[in-house]
Length: 113
Length: 116
Image 1 (cartoon, rainbow over the protein chains, first blue to last red):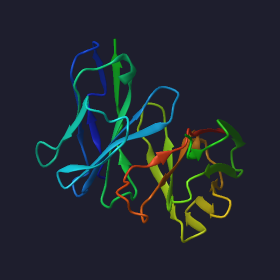
Image 2 (image 1 turned 30 degrees about the vertical axis):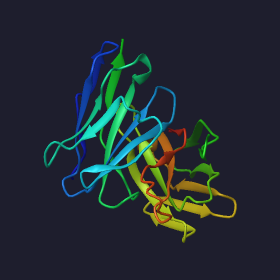
Image 3 (image 1 turned 135 degrees about the vertical axis):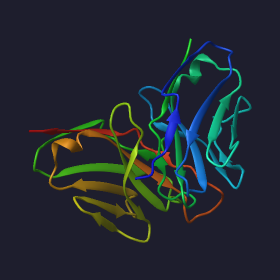
Image 4 (image 1 turned 90 degrees about the vertical axis):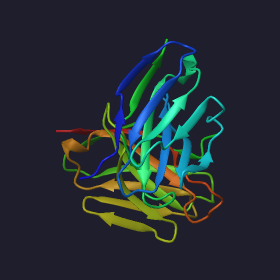
């Protein structure tokens, strides 16, 4: 059964460093998403990506964040200069239709020290 | 701003009985609703969805009911099994409303514990 994969499973970084989180969405899906979940809080939408451009972004997704689909399979989230409050689980998701059932990867736990 | 609310942080149910998880929403523009299940250290797994033009959708042991006038939905699991123990998230979207809103809005989740 096709699934969304994410690497790394856990990333530890120092405040101010850049991190890139990687995702491989389900191959025939057209819409790609990033969400985050801070410990003990709800899953929050960050950004959606369709047709090689950002479709929608939340207020959390500020200038420190960027997304890219560098090739036909990968989808990345870059945080330019990490802050302590960026520590969270980051989930990638994909869907074959807009705002339809989204399939999530296992997540990357980002720890900023 | 909690547009999607799950007011029960946890629920304990005996194996074989019915589990009922509840969810309320405040944004009347939401038109598509989903339930996800999440185990520790895994991503949310899609379970079942319902569009606002329906009031019930069933898939095996899982049934979702939607009451638009009350802005309330519920997930019924019958019969409950030990493997159902997980955190269940309710989510909503503006699938048909348009406006470019693609992201799902999640509730905080309900931890379902199935007791043998």
